[in-house]
Amino acid sequence: MKTALTEMLKIDFPIIMAPMFLVTNTEMMVAASEAGITGCIPALNYRSVEDLAVGLKDIRTKTKKAIGVNLIVNKSNIYWKKQLHTCLDQGVDYFLTSLGSPEEVINESRKQGIKVFCDVVDEKYALKVQDLGADGVIAVNSGAGGHRGNIPASVLVPTLKAKCKIPVISAGGVGTGSGILSMLALGADGLSIGSPFIPTIESPISQEYKQACLDYGAEDIVGTTKISGSLCTVINTPYVQKVGVDQNALENFLNTNKQVKKYAKMLTYYKGMKLIEKAAFSATYKTMWVAGSSIEFSHRIESVKDIIERMKSELKIAQQNLNLTLG
Image (cartoon, rainbow, N blue to C red):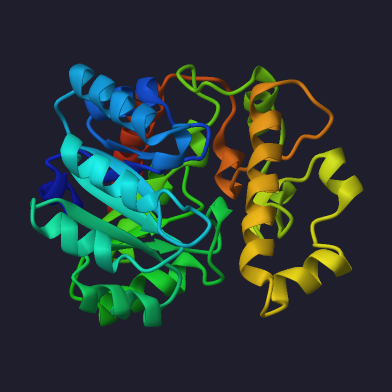
């Protein structure tokens, strides 16, 4: 299969294994690359810039195929510029930027021929990053896990394809081969898929988190502002139901007050990330597990390779069924 994404990154199948905070690790990155797609790891999955350099070197010793790094480029990540230059030194193949202006990342990456894809949730921001020189946009739709958009893929993808001159990669709500076919039919040049890879053998998270992705489904995904101040999707566990999904009156005031909101948002983000980290790696009643609606299609713990091969087989069947119907 050839699309703009496969050509740009020299991969066999037009899928980016989406960067997942605390979930994506070396084993998942290598497995994705060797199975014909590409993996993208959050720079924040490493505790320090030094650890990031060591981690990328480790990945490079195990695969020579395309790897990417996700950079959070707003004020909540005070280390992003150091992370950027560490990744440039290690020679990553592409960046995926989120939650801020990608201008400096694009300008620095262009010097080394490194691709930059930018998260966008609407046409306005897509055109802005295109003008800055982005190589593609990640169309984060309303079905995405983590920080999601508000527009369904059925509207967002064709809108961006009509307006943008750069590749459009759809992100959110897909966990099957037929889902992949539907996004390609809408005009997507590839897909960013994350949640189906949470309950994998290679994933470093707790067994409880993995099992939750099998036991819960699309109807159990809710949005909360308690983690970062922005809407983030989590599994609606009894703990989430108990504490609620909205910030309390004080938190809301601090996050909207002009004088203190910068620091309040940083504190909210820090506390939220610590809560997620504790839930991800240990059995605790404070189960704030991030996931998207595509966990609906996860029924057992598999390897990354098995999931990719299943999606490829399902895509072929979906194509055959479509041909029979149209024929």
